[in-house]
Figure (cartoon, rainbow, N blue to C red):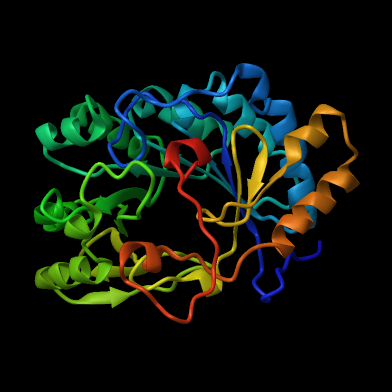
Length: 336
């Protein structure tokens, strides 16, 4: 099997796939209160089309797939898709990112289908604040889902926490405490500017470095080896079962090691989360294009991948060395 490399020499081996633009929450930094205009059913990739694209991508060098949304567990029969993807040679890992609302119901089924890893998005351990930021979500339901995933055998389950100064920055040590007795990796993620910033961005930005400094108050943070292209710097507190990750996409960009492509639920491939360029794979699928033609479009997307995003510029934390292109976007529409 060959390797996909862009014109900057980065190996591209990771594909994030949005299976739906629908969600059962209305998180304030992800979408407006009234929701978004959803794509018609016929414009959303079918499982058959997703399978075909992943098979082609794996043949080119994609080794890891992550299923996202919207909220992927609102897509009917999702475990069947995972079972199908597990039959593709060359894939080393299939993962899922979820808000956890339906996780208790699906955890054991997902494990049986062959899913390897789960990430749960969780921005507060306070029930009232959680309900506020999700516009109606239940913290108790999500925590039950996390318990179910651990019981089902998902080792080192990840919890993704978006840092928000004055909102959840006082909960950082509580989140870190989740890793003491259970195999959980809490990842603190810097808040990124989008079209739907509910909060005042510059007033609410809290860096991953600040979160790390707070966690050092609990003990020595010992660095752990990270996989190639990993977005998080991973550490473990002495005597803790789990680990802590710090993702500084704004203050310390890691574009030079980016290894990702993204496939939107309507079949457009994006080579950068913050790039305006997309290539329409669904148009090829709808006319039953051959695998070779699909592969060529994937290679083109890799070739066009920009050297860097400009989040620092948009947030006021500019790095003069970055050259990039950008777009206003909604996370729920492109899978985050």
